[in-house]
Each structure stands twice: as C-alpha cells, then as structure tokens.
Image (cartoon, rainbow, N blue to C red; front, top):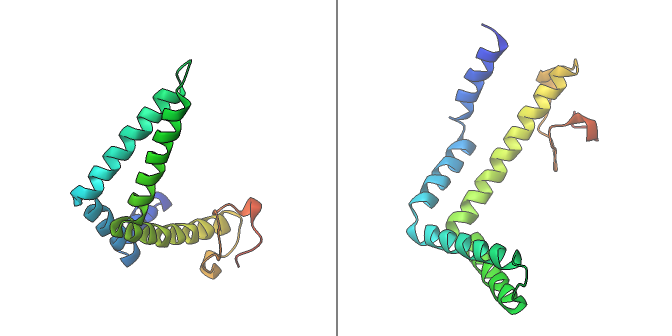
Length: 135
C-alpha cells in the first residue's frame, strides 16, 4: 500500500473524529435553520447592493453608509446566533486538528520523526518556514 492510500484511510478516519463530527453536525444544523438561512440570504443581498452602489460612477454616499450599517448589523446578528457560535467553535477545533496533521507531515518531509510531533500551540499554519518550534 502506498502513502496516498494510507492518507486516504487517515482522511476517512479523521471523519470519525469527534471534532469533525461536531463540525459536521453544526454545519447540518445551520443548513436546516430557516431563520439563520434567511439572515444569510438577506446579508448576501445587502452586500451585493452595497457593492453595486459603491461601484457606480457617482455613488450615493448616504446609501452606501446605510447599506454598510445594515450589512454589519446582519453580520453581527448571524455570527452571534447560537448555531454560528457552535459552528465556529467546532471549526476552530478542526482547524487545530488540521494544523497538528500539517505539523506531522511537515516534520516527516523535513526528515524528522513524525511520532514525536506534539499538537502545535497558538496559531500554527503548518508551514515550518515561519515556525518558532512545535516539537
């Protein structure tokens, strides 16, 4: 079995991890939340209106300010919703897991022992070129 097949199996295993399962459940719940979807739709329409107004040769600055306020208010409302709070927390956990996986892969690619890699702390990007050290 080559490493690609092994990584495919690892990716399938990742989809059984509780962090991934929480993210998937939060995503599905948000998709089914009609109120949240309505806010997202309204946000997208207002953002489109704002972009259209701002790109006019002679934009109406008062309209731009009003639309910008509405876009910001909708965004705040969306991000404060229970579903989005849950989703963003789950997404952060999954991103942390992916950063750990990236650190393992980068360590192995640089000749290090992947079995010694600990979970990166802080905001690891998975790129060792800017790394202060994770292991």
